[in-house]
Image (tube, rainbow, N blue to C red; front, side, top):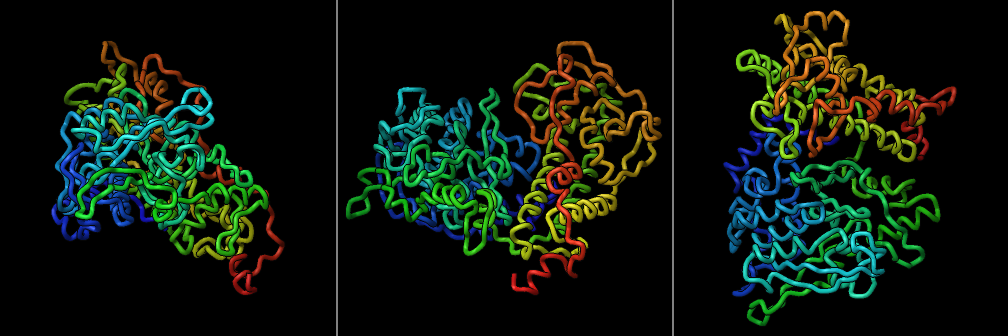
Length: 605
């Protein structure tokens, strides 16, 4: 079972403990300095080693965890905040940065990162910063189109030149040039083609040993930074937006892993999509350890770091045979192959997962109620809160000031996100059950009746209903009286919870119109707009419906008066989602005691 995200208070306490006791939290330098250099953008004192790559992976994972479980400011942090917050950036801890590290990068360089950040440039920003701070060599390639079209969409690209940190006099100058010179076209270099040994990245083996945080996943025209692999073998990512705000956010789920091309019997044309590792540069030294140059590692030298064409060959295997074999087990899809190869959890304990989710979300809802009541008091004392309309820099999720303190748009989107992460986990588990029923602990799921995937889906929905009905909390209505809600109630109102601090508590908690719960609601306050005027409560609630449908916050400008009110999709809740995908496969008339998993165990299956 995956450990649930910390409640906010526990997360903050954990970060504080790490800050207060770094020596206890972090091991000794895994790669002490051994080199010497006096020229270039920064001193080089280390080589990239496998230990260093794991150190880099730890650094990336900390950023991801702060972006998903830290404070509101950390979850919304842009690159400058990420790299200057000691709770997010482990390299601000002298113990982690190590002996001979280079000092914190100057503010103009950090701002240069932010000014033009996008998905490809995020990989440059993070890689260059880490290499600079840890006194490591770093390089960047320029590419040209292989077919004369735009390098971002060309059938393939060819490295046209390489620069290294030795070619520049300051970190800022090197960083600026590599940021400007890098786009998603840099990732379209095919294995084995002309000059491919100068590429920025290489395909990597899909093993826990080599597919580490800091690796990348290149889709067709978009790249994600692998940030964590959970115990279920699911890949979690960092991403960056091209909007003017240049936001960084978490991108979760195996649904991102798409677009792979098969090897086609040894022809690796188009095989640049997929999981990739940096082609870690090598510092060339003389016999006294003085750095005389920096070069790319060859494909053979990258084998130590996991260079492999396996992902394309495995896709060929799936195409030819309809399955991928992993240590004798069969995977019927590439996603199943990834989970089978990468998972560390030995058993699925789905009822425990449901229980942990319910406890976590109930705690979040109690925190939300504190925000609702704080907003009610603040609006009564200081007047209505203006909707952040007309600004790409501060929308309903990212605005500061009173709106940022009192509204719950960000938290509500994250709540829906956690709910749909649970839905994806349960769907993945049901799909896994067909091929690997022995991997399931079915305690509390009426195991005697579980034979097919449909049986398991039905058992999960029954358990979900029971557990959600038992997870309860109270909110104070407009009359100050307590109203009891369960997680089952909130699930039914998933798209109805108002985030607007000007609305009465009943509306904030999605009370059905015309029901007894809604009758106690006071009038609330019209929502003011920054340029004047206000939108009445009912109208504002209607026009905010799109924002209530999202399960990941968006960086774009958020209008209110001119907002569309229909035509956007809403994901199915768990009951409809699981039923549509899995119901309809009948069980045998007499299911053996203990269900399919127990029967297979007894019969050597």
